[in-house]
Amino acid sequence: MDVLEKLRILTDAAKYDVACTSSGVDRGEPAKGGIGNAAACGICHSFSADGRCISLLKVLMTNACVYDCKFCVNRRSHDTPRAAFTPRELAELTINFYKRNYIEGLFLSSGILKSPDYTCERMIEALRILREEYRFNGYIHAKAIPGADAGLVTQLGMLADRMSVNIELPSQTSLSLLAPDKSKEAILRPMGLITGKIEESTTELARYRHAPKFAPAGQSTQMIVGATPDTDYQILNLTEGLYKKYKLKRVFFSAYMPVAEDPLLPALTTKPPLLREHRLYQADWLLRYYGFRASELLDEAHQSFHPLIDPKCGWAVNHMEEFPVEVNRAPYETLLRVPGIGVKSARRIVKARRTGSLDFAGLKKIGVVLKRAQYFITCSGKMMEGLRVNQDAVLRSLISEHCRELAYEPEQLSLFGESKVLPEDITKCLTGQI
Figure: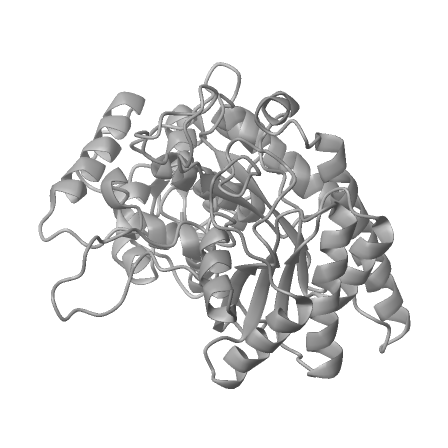
């Protein structure tokens, strides 16, 4: 098998390992003479320290695997073409793509070939060739292999910029059912090791400027949503716990895409729960940047997010006693809890009100989404003219506004296709303006 065929197989096999939020849909067959493919695999994106979006070659070392996880397209019982790069082939492919300006970095994961240690050793050798022989100093994201020796995980972290360990499923019960070869302990052990090594490296760098760096871009993880009965409440609480205990940079959610017939999995005709994934990402932003706790957004009585309003609006509607907020006096932390006011607009409000009082027109100019915020704020003690504010009226207004926008023509291209998530909602989620 030549390298090009290996590349085709192993980039396609890597597309289910998310490194960002949902990033496209299949637009079907192109028109005659058309170019481009919305579903093509092989490239994902990250962001550099100066804010640039950079392209990464996203590939597996091998799609052969000794495990039989029922949700995975690469499981050993699945009839699919198998391929494996040698460390030298992968290193040469990466550096040649880089020299041609196709990519600026590498996202490397792998199935488990023979054993976790053997697989990790091959990944380490590929990265060693890139770093030491080719002097490649670009961004590398490497997936740690659960079950691999701690010394090997440490070597991998010294060569990579970011590391991640996929937690896969939200509970041990789900993991035991769908991935009997894996255990929660085996997944969390390398996650804890990486956290400790990052802290140790940070301390060393504070003392010695030229101390070696261990995964300087931190670590992340991925969780599959929709393959099991686990609720949004369980997923969000687990997410919060991972951030607190392991200091993760990001938890990624992957809407389950049916790839095999199995009585324990959703039917093959089931559509990926992309709207649910989107709501979890919005809630994730609230945990990381807005000062919310998981227990504030969901509880045992309400274990799923409202499909028609975002989690921040949902929280606000259920806590009308906290509103209205006076934008000319409220502290920054309180402004962040107002729907329609994001991190940037809250900072702009704090800065602008130093020189004078803000009115509704001024708020709109600085980026506040008034169609949401108007129900929860006052300017100089006054609400927007003509508004009637009570819980039922506000909820109806937010839902009807959402439905009116969905019916608007012409319809904008949505990142989530038939789920009908608004492009504006997606943009606000990705930029932190919720």
